[in-house]
Length: 171
Image 1 (cartoon, rainbow, N blue to C red):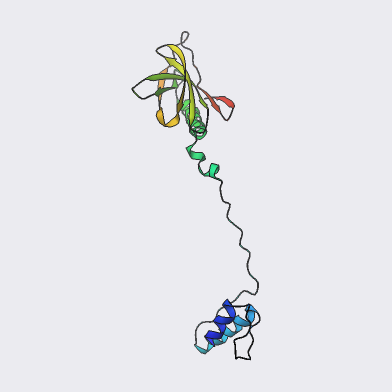
Image 2 (image 1 turned 180 degrees about the horizontal axis):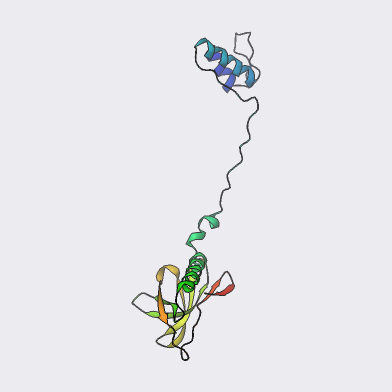
């Protein structure tokens, strides 16, 4: 009987067992046959669903969505948020500042950081007091955030600029 049930369940396109007059035409008939076998075996009863249950597919992220955390835009967005929160906690006579440290120890005082491509960053700043612009892969730059004293009037309180996704902001 179990053999007949398996045959009827898995091969529903062949509703009869050759040489047998019993017919399993539907999954519910096959479930009844299984219930008979299980009750003869004194096993706990099973409940079967008459209709298949529709299961929604999970929301599958795109390749870009999966890798967003690696983008220079995400790095700059998180840095801008951290600088803004940090600035709110600091005293009025100090301010946050960023130094970009490059290979070989070159240090650029950052005025603005911009997202140029998925991994590219543009650094606007000063190198030895002279203005400079540097385009670099985000993995080749280390960004050091530190506290700098405000010394008015020659060095007034300043903000750090960010350009992320074409939108300019200050932190």
